[in-house]
Length: 282
Ligand code: GUN
Image (tube, rainbow, N blue to C red):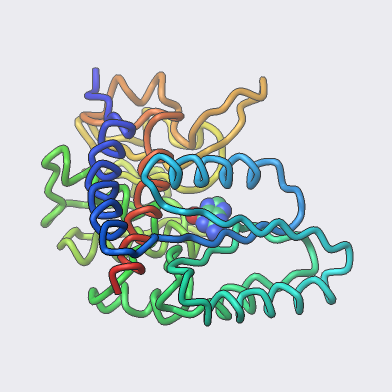
């Protein structure tokens, strides 16, 4: 039976620290402010953005949500770039994020790259990605950073450990591998073209699943006592929220495991709040 990692507990600690500093800045006349751009009506994005707004309110951060719904992406994209430009120059805005995915026809790369790196609280801009790669950063990508905070909170040192990251997305898999490497882990990234994926996973002391496939990681792919981190936010065949890891079987083998929900999710938003505070302090 594994130890269940409580994401909400770790998030609460991070949020408490951020809230105290936000309050201090407020006393000096600085209102920490986050601009959130949402394009279209993706139901998952609506939920994520609502949770971000809720977290801001809880911590005393002002959130300004810009909801854009253009049917013509060609015209819409230009308008969003204009909005980003004005937010980049607005001294009252500390952090800017554009919720992904964008509707078909929009160019995520162009929009992400338009955000001033010093306000890029998602750390998606190439400048911030490059800084993470060099281990000398202002902002860390929120999901991987939340995972590192959690490992730290549970005194799990990755130095010299076999760390396997399943998935190579720009948002999670790649920065996750980089952060584990920065902390001296021996890191392998596996993905859809890896031929012996299960075998590599079985070597992992720390296994991070970020593939977006329900129950993809089963108990036979996990080493006895491994730390298993589940980034998945999937739906099973009955439409129930679940992760990339088959929790029921995995928990019998793993040493530590994150549940879904209540694992990685809450920490991700806490790290966004921390990045917004960092932007304001700059
Ligand atoms: N869509 C899913 N996760 C994220 C995230 O962390 N940031 C943004 N901007 N969009 C997302």
